[in-house]
Length: 78
Image (cartoon, rainbow, N blue to C red; front, side, top):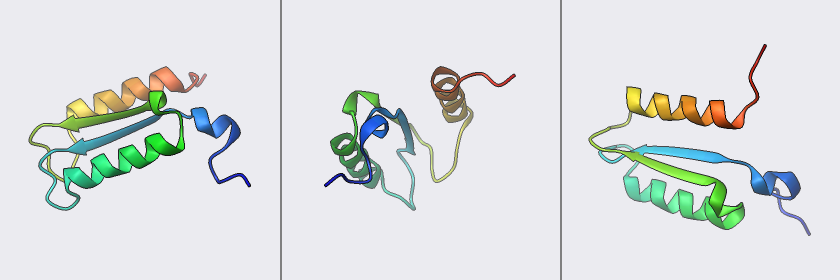
């Protein structure tokens, strides 16, 4: 039987971001999550980025990485 991730979804691109100083969600949990994702979909399409000193929030660097990811993987909107 097929699981929830099959066909074209196996090739979906994923960007996972995590601050290395997050007191709410430890970095280890992010690492475990990304390894689980890589076992479910094409691991070459999974990107895990960590941000030095970042707590449970976002940063300009992270938002720029998200923008680059969106620009690369989604078609432009007219």
